Length: 170
Image 1 (cartoon, helix red, strand yellow):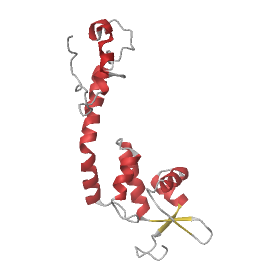
Image 2 (cartoon, one colour):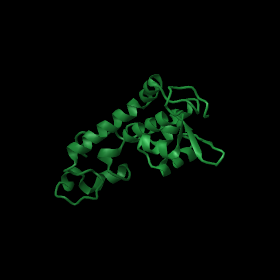
Image 3 (tube, one colour):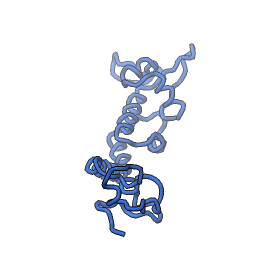
Image 4 (tube, one colour):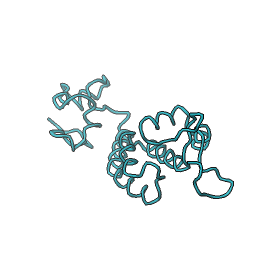
């Protein structure tokens, strides 16, 4: 790994501490990512981790994807589509993020709905504000399942009702 070509004066391998400093991720997190197969290192003669520079971009990719709410399992699946030593490039990010677009759009819609109805009943029967008798009389929403029925039910769930903007009358 030490013989990689690159600009003069730029180390082509990074220690775990250097990778942590450059990426803004704790050393323990890097160890976790490595244990999950998201990044990989080689060991020096002294059994110290050495990361290719490509690991820096992979860690950045992981951090950005996590920040927008992509699960680690989905990130791992995306990275598995790349060679283990490759850093995701612009084309990779475009392809992988396109696959996440509908999920992110759904989350955005849910967050907007939550924001706009945060001061109102969420339809789970657990709130005892005065409007619950009007919005969910007799806890009818309990028949549709557990949880905040008006906010979290996805139309893709078999037998579920789409998320409602307004309560229906029964």
